Length: 581
Ligand code: DUT
Ligand code: MG
Image 1 (cartoon, rainbow, N blue to C red):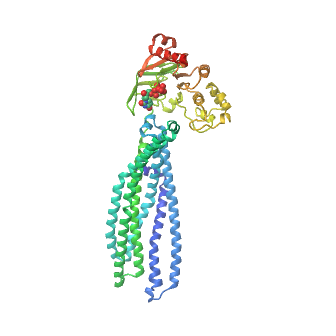
Image 2 (image 1 turned 90 degrees about the horizontal axis):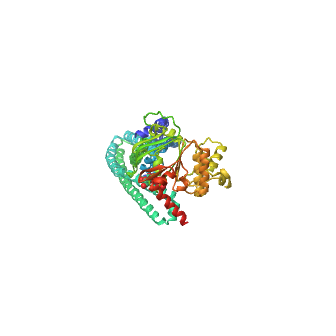
Image 3 (image 1 turned 60 degrees about the vertical axis):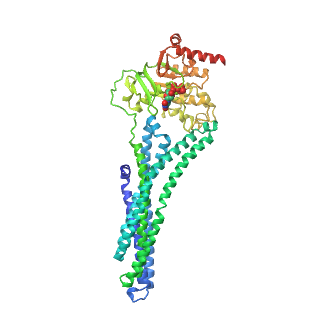
């Protein structure tokens, strides 16, 4: 609820207007039975005119009624407009804040929520909260007005009708309470099964190529069906419970109407009330009870909306773990140095200890290569530098300052990572490269692309730099994609450049040209290069051999050939592969 009020604050006057117009609409609805009674009592039966009907009165009142109805419609329309402004506005604000939060999440926080759940929250849950807000300012007012105003109008006709309201009221309350009580817990389940379904859809749509390549469509459809069935079952249960409402309500309503007719005709015979007023009373009782019935709908939206509010609150309350910490900011005066000090790293979501006892010092401008078997922790090691993850123990320093002391955005300006898997946005090649520096001019973009050995093939594309690439970069080959990603990283001009296995899809000649360009044009940048092939790393200043989650050795190619058996093993196995070719 806190969340809702917080976001409605900005629109309080809109909400107030919406409620005011709603009150107007209901007031007019309640006025009509009275005018109808007047037509019957005075116009037709002529009760105060000795039984002489009065056609003029019928016409006059009829016209008045029509005008009033138009006024009521206008109020209803305006109320709906202001309600929408409030609901959409607040919903939009919540969605924006959630999106900002999600953008600030660390990788492990995103893993914790799961992407599917985050998508459900920002779409479906926000919609539920919007419904809730709209119900609060419209439905609740409407229902209370019908109940209070309707009862007042009914009792003002004849106090003896009070008995009927007093009998019907508890029955409806019991009905509503029962349904609300039973459906309430189901809404959380409902959102969760929607999460699960969205996760499956998301995985399969983004991974459709793999699914098809491995002919897994049947399996995946099965997985989808299962999750979908769960959703359907839950929804069915909710609907079943809700369907108790109507019949009970109808029975109560019919009895109430019969009661009004019975009490009313007695009163008419006693001369206490006019026949037209009994007609009005029948309309009032159905208005009152329908108002109560709406209460059930409101409670339903309320519990659904509250379940969603909780889920959104979770997102909003999750402060990014990657926050600047109060640590000394004095550096050692270097520009582009990195130190690992007794670092241990664990993936929190599965508890896997990936790295331990990492001690490493990288000097500015150095080219450091990291080599090691697949899965040995190379990517994990370098992701600690831009703080994609935090070390479990020990410290990582950039320019002599603990990475935790930096504003994350500042740190990531210094450290550029070219990820193992190149991600693209569905826009032009130029803009995909310019992501590295949105202010860069064409010359700078071309220069970065040239160093990344990408300029040549980009110019060969149909529209050169303006060629639009697909989201997953599918219109390009693997090696082309990697080179565009490298160009993007080079354009950023950080102090430290991390290339995570980005040259694996390049032929040796292109790779050599890339390294030559890096040494020539980016000599002051510290380069950390992860590679699988010895050929890619042998010219690096130093090579780190990662084995069993720790640094087994570090030195130049010659030194390592001399003293590291792990390195020699890698070397010989690759040599054999080459010979075998
Ligand atoms: N791991 C996780 N969770 C993750 C990522 C990796 O538990 O989100 C595990 C898998 C692996 C280890 O950490 O056993 C190291 O993974 P990393 O990606 O660092 O290995 P790599 O050396 O970069 O492997 P590759 O050469 O295949 O890129
Ligand atoms: Mg890796």
